[in-house]
Amino acid sequence: MTLFYSTNTWSSQPQVSEKTKNLWEKASQKANWRIVQLPNGYYQTEFNHNDNWADVTRRETVEGAEQAIDASVAHYAKKLEFINGPKVIKTFK
Image 1 (spheres, rainbow, N blue to C red):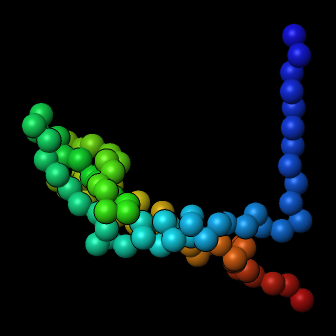
Image 2 (image 1 turned 90 degrees about the horizontal axis):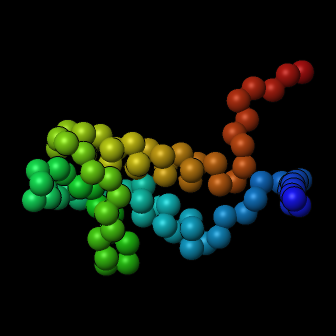
């Protein structure tokens, strides 16, 4: 049996493409999200991507669906915050 093993190292933060950055910016805005009720009674969260609504998650309650959207918005906002590299928390002299 042959195994292939590969590693990568970077001397700087991997660069995010402009397309990905634009997607994250759009996903970090709650106005681009919606909740729809499915025939089985579940609630589906959807994201508007290029004028197409893409389903993301399904939840049993409207509150659960809204929490899922809030968590997604916070997740993408945090990703945008770290595009330019790590944030300095503390320095020592």
